[in-house]
Amino acid sequence: MLQILYLIAFVAIAFLALHNLVTNVITLGVEERKASPRRARKRIPHPELLDEDGNLTEEPLLVIRSASLEEARSRLEDLYSGSPDED
Image (cartoon, one colour):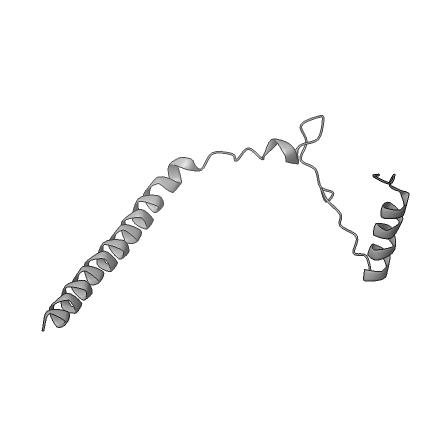
């Protein structure tokens, strides 16, 4: 009987927590919609996206070239064989 009472109490607390969470999310959404017209200023980009003159860069900032498994193994083998021996 005590287990059923604990279960009912846990379910009630869980529903209260869920209700509180949903209420807070809805309130936050409503407040964000009210505040958005005030924040309609020009957005300043992150400094890393600007070049030396302060203009927004259009080219990609990072280009990653894919390598095959054999090429990666050969590069690692070259690095390993080119390193000095630790005796």
